[in-house]
Length: 162
Image: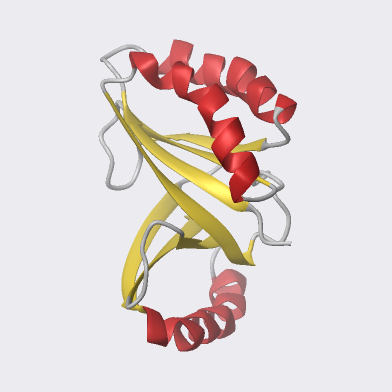
């Protein structure tokens, strides 16, 4: 099953992270679960983000559930200075919407490609991951395609834990 995800990048006022992230992990996770979703993760800015920026990923069984469930979470982001979302679909990873279990530095890398190159891009990526993961303390946690970008373009998110 290829779950649908909402990737949300947000920016908070200085000093607001602890309270906001606790609320998101508690109230937000419960709101997602009540609508059939999962809070896949909440990450504070590390690589390429400001310290007061964060990313939240929620997983939903399908686009319909995302539309209904994500609306329940939007109120939590009312206090954010900025907030923008993108709809994604899981491809090669994850195969289940189980949140990554390990702590570490998480990198969110987007790639813009031509839609016709998707199959080759996915194949090359999948073949490279075993060697990468066995050589480094790293894990490919997600490889998602954007539902908000249409052919002839494509946009892919690679989520890696280091």
